Length: 300
Image 1 (cartoon, one colour):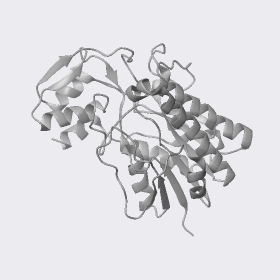
Image 2: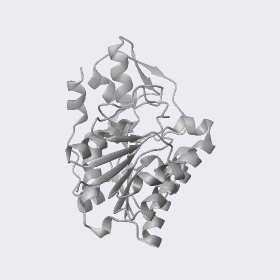
Image 3: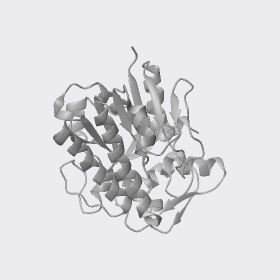
Image 4: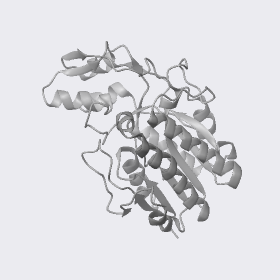
């Protein structure tokens, strides 16, 4: 009998890659996605997966999909900072109530594991990189507040009810299928889109801000490791998913090798992000494998 795995947000950037990997590994895959993400031009599907177009905020509509499931990869979210500033209630409903719905459905159906995709934005501005999972939170907007609140729900469902959960804090994820719409899309995607259109690359501020750019393949790899691990020290725990190195935005612009201009800085953004990945390396055998400069060279 095949393993049933659920991917919430399975038509999006990262979720669709996880769907593809699970299909490759002969899982029966159910994607739950309401196709509402504003940053997506395209929603990705796999002909061998099953798709339920529903919001995770509707418990009655999604709970039946969890029957018989072994694994849940929870990525569905209000996933960009700017829209959550405009509509904080939606962020709370989707990211907190929606996550509680996913966890409850998993608990009610005795799912073996829930793997939750969170964000490094919870570290905010007051922590000095490299960022370690034990550092205090510094949530500066509705997006980070709600995503980190959902981390606590994941921990509680493990400590109180024994539902195995694993939490990932993603750094700056890039790669194939990355969103290209809007000013808050990943800068690698924006730059490549601008070069293809013959436009100048637009660098926010002076370009010295540094980011830990992490390829989506490495994100998929650690999700699969989390699915397969038997190490109980991982359950109810938070793991950084980055590379442990970073690049300035100006360096990325030079990798793309195209004329650039500067635009005004944005308030409330960290000057530097850099993940300490020792915990993920030790407990989940995580080793990021994709080099940003090499990847950009293949896209030009």
